[in-house]
Amino acid sequence: MVTSSNSHQKILLTGVNGQVGHALQALFSKHAGYSDAIIALDRTELDLTDADAIRRVVAAIKPDIIINPAAYTAVDKAETAPELAYAINATAPKILAEEAAKAGATLIHFSTDYVYAGAKSSPYVEDDATQPLSVYGKSKLAGEDAIRAVGLPHLIFRTSWVYGAYGNNFLKTILRLASERDALRIVADQLGAPTSSHSIAEAVLAVLSQLENGKPQNEVTGVYHLVNAGQTSWHGFATAIVEEYTRLQVDRNWPPLKVTLANIHAIGTRDFPTPAVRPANSCLDCSKLARNFSVTLPNWRDALVAELQNLTQFRSP
Image (cartoon, rainbow, N blue to C red; front, side):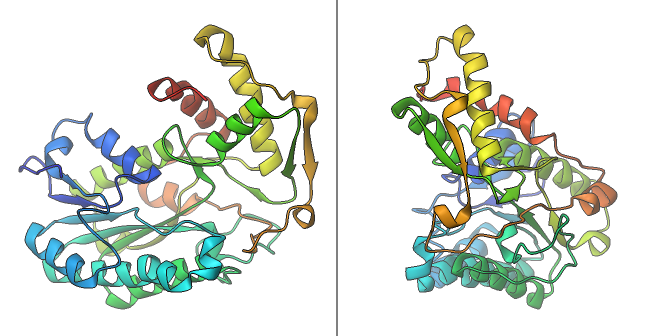
């Protein structure tokens, strides 16, 4: 546990072993004041399946702000474990919201592009109808609804295709497979914005600084889309990973990949069936975030290069 002092409002951060939680903790630790203001908890210190434990922890800490990136994110496993998915993604946010309201705290929560069906031909805006296709998406939407029902000041950030230099994710998987195989087959008919955990953390910090500087919370409470700019397919993302890794490889003395760009083959969703149905269109419009907070995220390709460069902090692929 990281303790807090009084430079900034006291912040309770959950899920610090996850991608977004880890990125937030790492970023906060580099900013004067925030490193002392944050209380960062992992699942051993805050079990989100234990309602009483959530209540005890929040009551003891009395935070001014709760940031909750913790989630059950095993999309396919959720299809056969709906109780666990709902406990972490729906019930826990409800209790956090209730306890935050008691403490007079603001809740910052993270949701997903999977709340949409993906049938729209253009990027989704926050007011578009939700229609999740999977247990994971339904459980995340239930968490959103529970927070809204409590009626406290809150920000819900819907993000998509999260990856980073830390944790298990698409970036790490592609680099591992590309070092083992001669060819890859990657889905090309699902579109979205790969979003780096560091980009998310930077955006949240920018928003948080405005809240602490007195931005009226009643004017900005609600749901926001928060993704890197631009769009691609999973095939395009995989190709970019291999291309950018190869470009950086020589200077950084990284091991070469086995696969070549010519052998990353595009396939359809029907050729790669999964237990959970994914939306074909996961593109999210972030105009509301830019309008209310003047925050924009970098292009997904630029963010990818930055995350690849951060791989030196961890074991090389």
